[in-house]
Amino acid sequence: MGEVLTLREVSGPAPPGTDDVVVRMIASTVNPSDVLTIAGAHGSRTTFPFVPGFEGAGVIESAGCGVPRELIGQRVLPLGSAGSWQQLRCADWRWCVPAPADLPDEIARFAHINPLTAHLMVERFCTRAARNVLITGASTTIAGHLAELLAARGITSAGLHRGAPGRAWPHRGLWRCLVTTDRPGWAQQVRDSSQGGFDGV
Image (cartoon, rainbow, N blue to C red; front, top):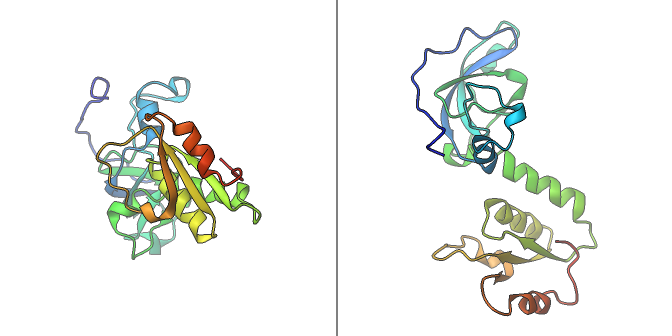
């Protein structure tokens, strides 16, 4: 990514418009959506200069005249657009979701794309009849979210991944089994773990 990224010092944003707020970013992250955009995958809808960062947490410093005054000073997640890889960003206040007070900054910055996607997947596709699910890409963050959400419903998960040498699995107890595809016989291992078939993949 370093070939196309440049660190620049710029002046602060203009005074916020009627429905806008200026958010001082506390923490942000590198989501796969950032990597894809930087790599040019969405070139037709990317305007330049472009500031990446689809996820992050920050504090509202100032607000336009149409914004409720009580929002100033509140810690929020600015959603709906990129721009979190900067110290100050302007955003529509209606796209700024308050971050729970008990959520640390380093977790709040991740609280948008993966958790909400996982929640929606489970709500839409895991009916009450589902008892056994196979999750691909088990070493990814979203797979961990899925395993936790499924476990809360009493659904067991088998995980499939390409191998993650040295990886610590923080919630290994959530997985009935973890199958590595870079080892011989992995397909049979998946079949053996299916307990007669998976209700969802």
